[in-house]
Length: 125
Image 1 (cartoon, rainbow, N blue to C red):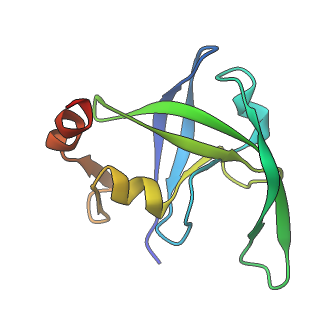
Image 2 (cartoon, rainbow, N blue to C red; image 1 turned 120 degrees about the vertical axis):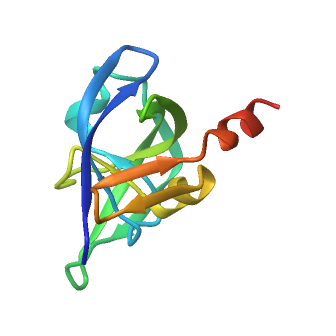
């Protein structure tokens, strides 16, 4: 399995921080480690807990908070909702839903992620 992990600037309601971010097409939703969210953005309590399944058989994690964040890829600002996941092994993870929403293309040969700038223009209209 190929992996792309890049330092990305995250910006929220409280500030900004660069986090090493894993692009994981096997993860459905985007996630952030709880140690990093409080300095970047306010987190909102979910109406009801969500349970996510990990790669370990039979292991589930309860998620009770979510945060809306902006982040930059090659100077293109994108945004999405991030689940605040206790025990997450990465600082942040960009999941398939975010990648599809922003039409990101992963280039494993060059460890690069591309975002079509036209998608940003369409979001503003």
